[in-house]
Length: 502
Ligand code: MN
Ligand code: MN
Image (cartoon, rainbow, N blue to C red):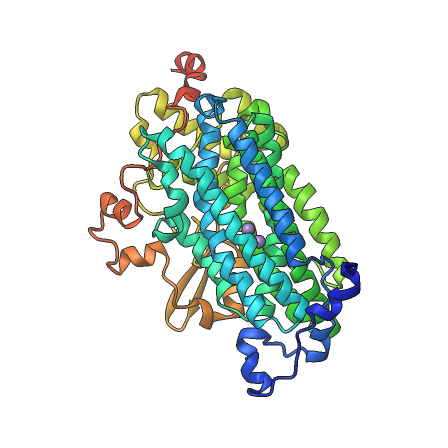
């Protein structure tokens, strides 16, 4: 029997927009779940996904991807990379698996939202495959992380956070959940598609999965490099869901609404990824194998591509673009200091990444680093060399941003630039880490006002006892809290200079 070409039957087969007879269209696709912008059904019928695939083809390709990732893993089973790897690199894996796997699992239902509530037949198809993809991402990464659990007995099973992290009240998990619940699970399918598949999956998974994969391969971690490349090949497909949704919005006169969704979600993702990817690239990756700085990757993978895509769609750069460009130079450096100072609260061992050679590199990539962030590291280094590492821990919970849930930070040094953006709303006082975070709150105070940051939870008695140990317990840390990745060896490189000065 002669088989038809896919192009000959695809349009007909995927067109499942039948006229409902037993329920009304509004009951089948309630606006608040499907499309709060009420784009006409006629436009959804023309939703044309550029990536067309049949189920048969999908299964074949995905199977090949899995076979490739698992083969690399088993081929390298006896290669002792993970026994020799720099502790900074192992921390990247721990941070990645814990921070990412819970989001992958959440994305299963995000994509399923498109399958059920998307009004375009093509969107529903893409969502179905997307949902299956996210199950694969959850499972393969859990499997690969599980393998590493037994290698980590001394530090208390930090890799178990691959499955545990997002279910705890760890401060990192609260931050990640606040952003991803907002974008992925609490909006209609149209808004969700723009925020998740366009802003997040187009702009930022590229950064973590492609750029980090390049670093992984240079370091010699071919298992991780292949794994995350395999995942990104699916994410690239998901990104197209949002692009088609944006086209429908723009053509239906919803340009301002589309722009607002993009502006909100791009910033929410940016602040989270600057911590996840920024620390990994500029501080945890061994110096010799660093491919580019985080800033260079942002410029190459995010700014250039994202800017072009926005303009092609008839949208503009977010209104805060200049604030964002400055943030690329600064934000992750202060967040790195914060994470290192609170190392017992995280499930990986933060690498300081500030040997004399690394500081030179940082100064070259971020001119002015020594006079600003470097000043803080001078004090930390002195304390360690004086034999007082206990002075290098934060004693209290820092002030947290109500939107990003990250510490409110600024730029230290001579021009000390730290600013809290405050807001009084219905009798409650809110703190934000930037003008943009406050702006996001103001776009929809009903959505955000009831949320409690870790500081709020501490103050209203949710954390018991309200002590350091009580806080670790609340955050789910048993005995696996982080320590300096290199046991302060990096500070010793300054010993001679220190002895001379004192
Ligand atoms: Mn995924
Ligand atoms: Mn995805």
